[in-house]
Image 1 (cartoon, helix red, strand yellow):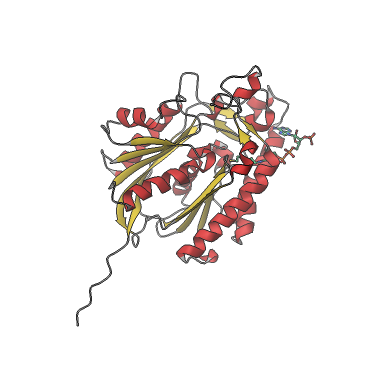
Image 2: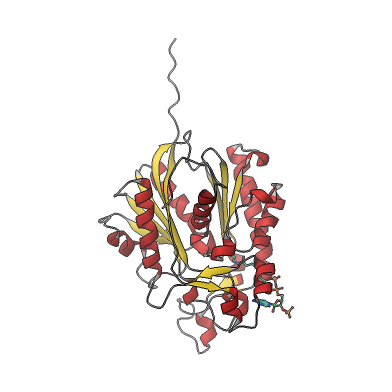
Length: 337
Ligand code: COA
């Protein structure tokens, strides 16, 4: 009797990673010069030593273009079937930033759209891209997370100004099998709109187009409750995903959490019962880059050898919305540019 072997499950597979940081480094000392803060406070309360901010005239789409070009180069490809761009600092309120980036990258008339899930944006964008691939709507997708938070930070607000940085990261996902290294093995996504007030830009949208108060045009965050939600939501989401894909927690080599605060990353490791040393940390160098955070952390971890082919890697992100998401993969033998 002959048996037909089961066909491998179609999955989105990581093929290349590209990142871009603007040239201007903003140190804690520089911020301490104009805000009531100190290098000591910022380092001990957040773990951040510096961040990168764009110069006037540089937009999110410019960073996205650079990271996208590098990801395509790293993957050794010059065409994709779709572009998904995660950002909460788009070039314009309308239209989306992705089509212009796709055109600049020479990708033709492929579908291109933005995802707005704030700091969880990259995982949401990867899930959207993976869904296009698994559904057979695309063979290859460019996923970009790009932000210019420096433009939405209230210069008078020390609680947010010291935390956020600008940057972009991108990956190329391609159709393959769930059995091969690099396959995104599943997603756990969630949101809690009851707490949308914890992270918001009050004005500029349809609920409040303009405001007499200039502060309403800037990003606001209630740090303490956000901290607590970040740990619980990323922790529960990660645990749910690990259970679904059958990875015992102790088998996870690296936890790449959203880079918001080193204390959150350590608390996430503690929540999961993973040694803190397995938590990838690069926020000391780049700050919180929102939708660009996960790919920037992955690129640094690749460079330092913290993430190597064959490693079991868990990705988890959390942000405004509230929104959160996790995914996991066995790290493939790829290059980063
Ligand atoms: N420099 C100096 N003092 C500061 C400061 C700064 N940059 N920012 C806040 N403070 C002060 C506060 O005013 C407060 O002073 P008070 O006690 O006199 O009122 C004190 O420090 C403690 O503030 P608190 O907000 O309780 O600090 P914290 O330990 O919670 O740290 C955050 C603040 C923002 C670093 C922390 O809450 C955090 O990381 N939250 C999550 C951020 C995050 O993850 N954001 C992105 C999610 S997507």
